[in-house]
Length: 426
Image (cartoon, rainbow, N blue to C red):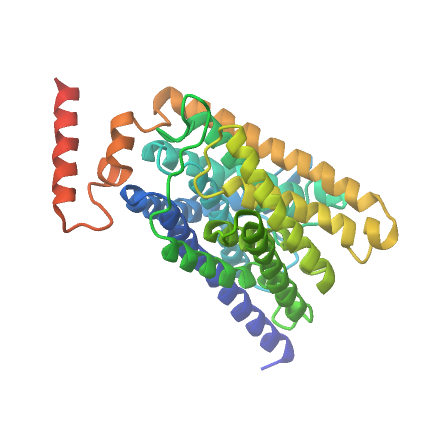
């Protein structure tokens, strides 16, 4: 065995392992969202996450990877690599193409899962399946090509190591478009405009989901090195940990002193905000910068959450504050704190300017394309669940079963749903 073959084997093991960690994050999304929504919609959350994995995998294999990493056309899209066939020789890899695809395929699943949380408890499941196909086959891969596939933003010098902009800001703005179009949950806002709090059904479950996401994030960030012997792995891991902890600390102490109690959902989302924010610059920024990035992300998440409430935009799990707001901040923070080319470190404006331009393009693409796609879907499939379906719960309405299923409540809801269907037919 040669040194080169040993190195290749180690790199393959590393990338497959970290890809598996990222895929496990879907369990985190499922538990987090199921814990944040009401019990009658828990199964629907789980089914959407399964759809994310199933549809994301297939669509990215058939179409998405080629659009993202195929030979460049005008800086906008790739033109080969569909079904992993065709000319992909321009991709310089130290691992096999199959291994690289697996890692990138894990990323695409995360993007659609961000949207899932923002439209929880009221999106039509059939419409969601169509949206998942479009996002994973076209919307995300085209944006990814601009930054990671040799497109126009990469040529300008935009830097996003593991996806604060490409995954989280893009996914967050797609989620915002969907949440606005579909509208708030029934009864969420009173006629006077005040918010009626829908209490989470299971915060311990949501906490376990957050811990799984936190664990998977080490694969998300450190795995992006694509090499088991990359000396940056340890540094990437520690700044990931520090940013998550400081984001959680910011929200823990803010809510403690502001409201006299430490608010669990805010602390959960504050830690996730810190993880999102560090993702762009985890391979570059210092430990101290990571602490600052996490703290700002935590406070920013709280501010944007309050802004959404004031605008009467219903986001049950905080997808937009956690992913879009923190993703934007993390991408900007790299332009500020990068040891080479950062505004605050070297007084250089170029990187920050490119980061801002890239954010504008990615966020506009995510919001605009998702808005357009949902409008088109709504022509054939109503994107919103009916009032009756929402009242009974999407678990019974779309899946015929409840999360906890051995009670008279299940029988009563089934009978009610059957009666509604009979009346519709009449």
